[in-house]
Amino acid sequence: MSWREDVSINKLRLGPTGLVQNVVPEVVTAAKVLTVADNGKTLILSAAAGVAVTLPAPKAGLKFKFVIGLAFATSNWVVGTNAAAAIIQGNVLVAGAHVAGSNEKQINFVATAESLGDWAEVESDGTSWFVSGSAVTSGAITLTAP
Image (tube, rainbow, N blue to C red; front, side, top):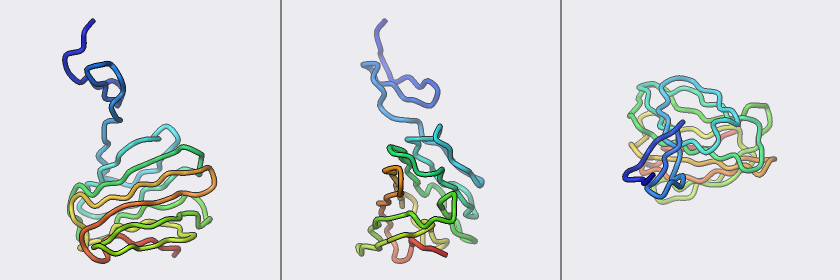
């Protein structure tokens, strides 16, 4: 059998050599609770009003990426931990400035400040979630412990 083009199987994209290239992105339009089975996903946040995405408990190797795919004007998209623990660490680059987070509970994509393509990625060591990301407009991503 020869591979002539990319093939998608069960949300995995295989290249012409048969090797996994990436996981097919998932468009999110409503609140979502992530599980270990979602590991590696890129989630395209695409609703006119932001909602909450809940991370699973930290486990070494878990990784998720969130990308703004639709402008939203009424409420923030919030990516938060699944418990009371403030375990988000790291920083994001927002309008050329580093926004640091230490012991935070959530990542906020702020309504009316977002730009298509703004993103944040989290990866776990089993204890914490480490965040990195980028946004064009000042105030578009915040890290908070409300």
